[in-house]
Image (cartoon, rainbow, N blue to C red; front, side, top):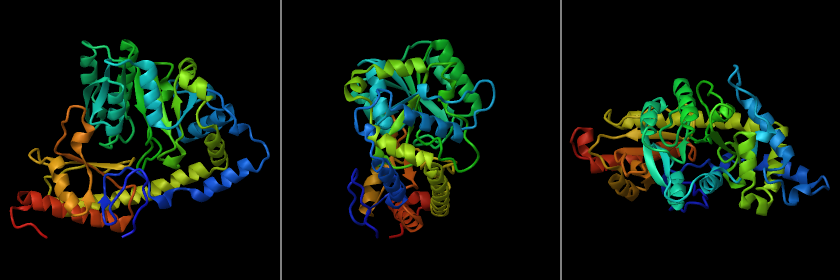
Length: 397
């Protein structure tokens, strides 16, 4: 088996980790970035090697705005195009979240999060000593009726939501729920922080535009990143919000001291955008990921009993499995690891240690053969721990 080199996570040589949410190393656009970097460094002009603007260099924000407008369908009177004055460059969504916590909350504040939600975002909030309160998610995304009821008795610092192909559930906030969220946020002056890292990885249909296009109607900060659509090692992303809120964020000590974030990488990515390589790469990723999602779904449906349920993803990276309530996937993980397969249990994605019968799997890292072998190992581990799910016979070894 290929020994994947993942600096962030050390895997044993024969381990298949179906939980890791990263692209395959073979999908990283090395040649495109090499060509762009050579072009930028070969011009004999090195302004992008100096300290940059606090909001991010203007030329890059212009390129990024043009890319965003080209990717999104902005139709109707409620939508408007993205301008460079509405963008602030970040080191990716994790750094952006940390900065938002610093500027828009204080220790002890309440923050509303989806249940389930991205487990490392929950850790960032914990680092800032915030009080996390869950809001349920169903097949249409964040349950806005419950959100509205909760806001009758609390005044949170902000709401954190993943409106597109949510991590881990894979659901997308419906059009009706988007409208309800906008109304509630405007009425209650609730700051909405929308993590839109998977926005452009749609495999069926066309996703609605970024929540950031509604910045004139309700307080919203939309977060985008190149980690999932280009390469995570670039550590480059953006904030999309009102021009006034961009000015507020740009006055932070971090940005004023550092002179903006990542001007060198921004220049290279700007060239990638201008050449059309980013759009072409996203198109390629969508083809690969849609195929891999299909492979993983078919194998899961073939090998797991009908009591284990999930929805085929329409975008993003993940499949969210629901086992019968008696199954604790944290305990199941230990058995799976003895069979050289791993995953992330549902409790990781809960701020209240719930969701214990759920499991997140990712199809972005591995090709067909390893996805199929990973499911085979996982199913044998499930059958070893819970043979009753398979009719109560002796487990297959």
